Length: 625
Image (cartoon, rainbow, N blue to C red):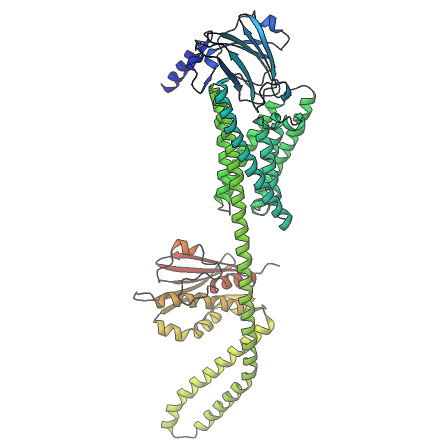
């Protein structure tokens, strides 16, 4: 029903095409479509004297797209007021090539005006970005306006808007302010990001600056701003070239900014293919223009394909949740919606929205530039944070290296005294055999425990010294032995926290990797589980440890029943210096992840599971070369 009502109203307006427009009905502005009749000429060979005698018909549409025909309109304007009126008629579609205007009063030609973007501004009585001319009407005077539109190289809409001269000047002030803000803001973004490219040489800064330049040229061209200041035609007459270059640069920006060459090889190749097609379309358009052919059908098809592909790329990066992807998607969506709305408005026949179309596309272009600039700022902040975290982590590692060196020195100095203590314990055990049975039975268990502790101290100091001297060295070892070794070191803490540790590991599982790094990672995971359970108000505190082989990969899982962590915390759990512990440093899990990936050629995964946190270390049993 809405469509039927729309069509009835649309054609009802054209029913008055032969009726004069009365200036008493002019309130601020009015459109002339409903008061104009049309004659379509094959070519443009007829003179005005020949055309004025032709029969003009009621138009079915005011949008003629790209056509080699000349379209004539005839409009009668009557000043039915008691005062002299000066009116201005404007066609806001600046891309019409040639417009010729003849004004008649009482059957006599009184003025002939030449407009269109192929004509210089000096011949116009009103210098403005859109084609405009004025008509002076005395009280109770009629004027018949004949306008010939000819635009074989661009779209053509024959709708004209009428204003009184005072309202037109007010409109010019508003329009000048809009474009001044647009140009100034765009240039500021260009200079800001171009200077950053010069300073830090990131390619996406260069692509962004080029995007801003091309979008600015595109908008100033299609709006007629460049033509209004008599820019050379080779600059102001090729708006579609700037549009295609913008599409190409936008894809190259996304490729560089999101690092798509390493994230998706196929998409990266597709971007290069589409950019090549855009470049070929630009060259083809120049060739077609030089041969006198209209390049716009080709340009529109290629532009539509590139727009759809850009939306696909924006959806891909948004799905991957890359830094700045949401803003990139918003920018591409705003451009797409503006152009779709522009196309639908022209198809509908309501060319009254030409002015709004120009402003809407320009505003969306600026928002696109702004969104991309904010996305770049977010990316730079993330890079700075990564560098700062890396510096802090390096400082922590340096500090730990000094601690390791100190520990190695202590181990070296204490190894001999500990060995002597062990020798004395063995000698004391020998002497104990000659004592009475009661004394021997009491002291033997104590002496046996003393020997075990001395042996453990010796092994620990040997590992400390070896780990510092040798670094990451691969060796064969039994996984269960390393697990038991680590559990022995945390035995006291386990008893204090009243935690039950359950171990499930096949005695035959072995690894060839850096044992020291393996035990350090395992120690961090077990220690974190004990810390989580120490403050948990639950019964049957449990840490479950499981080691198993899955398709040539060793999976070691450390899980607890301490309640787990919130999803928001889980996202940041590997961030350096992020901690939820009161006295925590936030370096345990980052170091564990780094050791797992660099020294063990594995992966560390942390997630909530069954009322607690589950940490899984996956290590390939055969290291990659």
